[in-house]
Length: 133
Image (cartoon, rainbow, N blue to C red; front, side, top):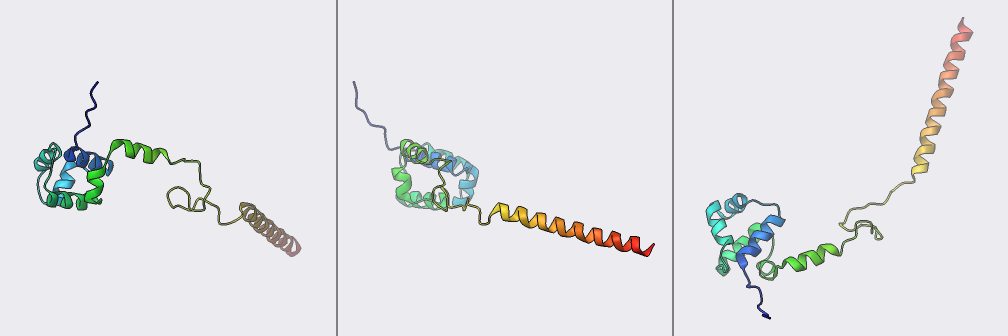
């Protein structure tokens, strides 16, 4: 039984982060001022120059350390910690306010009162018309 560890393949990590950011090789190439073939070659490389890594990280919107420490397992674990139905805090899981800021019943009552008022006005108008005849 072998206990070989996976190589720290920076190119694959860059490729995976780029995919997670929903970015095509062409878009990354444009951000770096190069072409798609250069990005493909970089993503197939096991190592990358530190300065180039910093430029790539900036284009991807992450830190160079994030690329170096990226792992599929940690991403899966991170996303598995979210529970879509857990909005126990007022901002929810992703910082959106999912709580009602008004009482829906108050809105129903308000609408009903406006409808009743409109009906009263119609009745008054019709009574006026009848009196004229």
